[in-house]
Image (cartoon, rainbow, N blue to C red; front, side):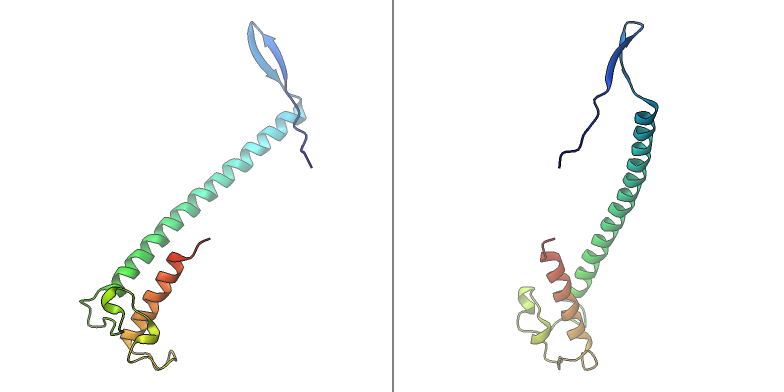
Length: 119
């Protein structure tokens, strides 16, 4: 369904071209501008949050992927930079029985999965 957009009336005032709006059209214009202003402020805040969260995820990924860590992954694919929680020798399939190295692999796999996920 096509929306009807009223066309403003063009007038000339003092030799300059202008647009004439009814009081109702002007009030609608002002209300729209206020809504857009509020939405753009929310978008700015959300963009800042996304940047902060992306930085946090990068830092977490770097932390769990650090091969020099005493909790480095011992999974077979860890040397290739693709640790897999199921491949960790200390992982028994439950969160209670997970040693720190396995937890590290699980976090790395989770971060990688979410990074590769398409919206």
